[in-house]
Amino acid sequence: MKKVAVFTSGGDAPGMNACIRAVVRGGIYHGLEMYGIRRGYNGMISNDIFPLDSRSVSNIVQRGGTILKSARSKEFMTPEGRKKAYENLMSRGIEGLIAIGGNGTFTGAEVFYNEYELPTVGCPGTIDNDLYGTDYTIGFDTAVNTSLEAIDKIRDTADSHDRVFFIEVMGRDSGYIAIQSGIGGGAEIVMVPETHTPLKKVVSALKDGWSRSKSSSIVVVAEGDEEGKAPEIAEKIKSKVGDKLDIRVTTLGHIQRGGIPTAYDRILASRLGLGAIEGLIDGQKNVMAGIVNNNLVFTPFIDTIKKPKPIHDDLLRMVHILSI
Image (cartoon, rainbow, N blue to C red; front, side, top):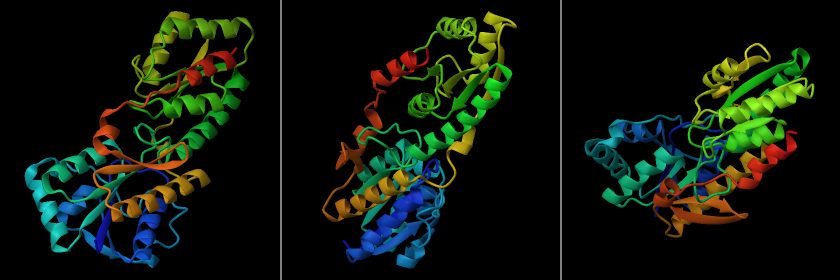
């Protein structure tokens, strides 16, 4: 193998640049010609492919976002789009790919490999931490810290005005951000997609706190909770408690995706990027590089896509015990 290309796809995550840097410099160290693809699968189709050298990735380890840009590609979902992408890669002599992204990215890579057998190794780049085959994904730690900083500030105003705040964090299918930022922020209740929290339980907990003269309460809601998004849940709670509680809502939104990656995310991304490129050189294909119990492992794409990654019951239990 002489030529390898790297790309980022799907939602951006802090630490993607550190991963790109590790992939490129690791490849160059091992004598490869490295290429970048702008805007993921769209760039593959539009032939936006260019050489990368060591200087191309200088001074990016600390930057959020991705220098290779990111996009979701409808055209790549078609056989015609994938054929065009393959032909563009072959015209450059590219023999392997490093894909940095999440579920959608690896789903595309799985289909692409099954059709053209172009070796691909993935790096888990998503703030949701929802990929099977790795304890943590690139960007998750930064997203939790961003959420936690916001929760701490909201707690100040909640305490000053005796208010209940429903704070919505990202996590369409995964409550990892919610549970970790909720524990770290001292939330009274955390609502996540993995387990059902009945509204009557929320009402009971809030009323109990109020009866004990609690000056404030924080409810952290993952955006994918089955009871709805935070504004919707807050309205339902208001209808049950009336004017007894002063309820407010804050949706953190895309602020969780941006910003300077934490030290943990930079190190994790660097380790995964180097592991991915060295795994590709050693013959790994159609797999994701991950860290499990502090060891580098490779998991087939189909498993990272299909297998669930549940939240440990101890974390949910911890929220309940520590909120009294």
